[in-house]
Length: 225
Image 1 (cartoon, rainbow, N blue to C red):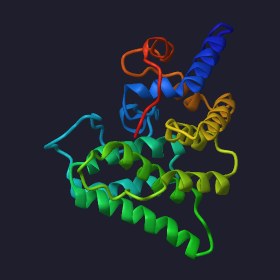
Image 2: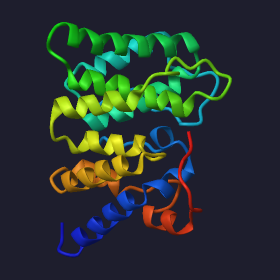
Image 3: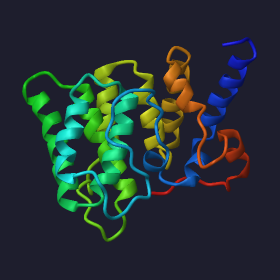
């Protein structure tokens, strides 16, 4: 990276983190904003606004999702996999319930075995929050009443310093609480200095604009679940 590129990247990262609230105006951020994962394996690509028939067999969703999550997958890849899983799961309430039930049991079983699994708690917490953002009013929502953010917080506590989890938590807390959101955002920004893929995500484009342009043109106010 040349001497001029890094300052531009740093400015973009700061713009993203200081402006997460307006960034979310474009739509549910856990769903509408794809996570950059490089060449990593995830579920088959699906458009965020997809409804109706598809080539992918939904009966395989829980199996395929768990296969990816159980393969020592980085947090950013988990975020993108769970984003796609949510879009698919919305097509079938039974599939949606099966997936989150399996992930919840997986996390609880790790506690029962005496070896709490930070990634398992992150997975079910992030999926619960994604479900809340994407299952429409009047649609069955198996995440109703679940506090996914608290599970992501538990994962961060178990994991220790993890800027990618902090990035996920910053997205989840866009509607608030503000102090928690700012704390997660600062930690994500600090960690991005040593995580090129996280830095790429923080500086990425959204809704056909750069983040900086979005911050200038978007109306004030935050994303509301």
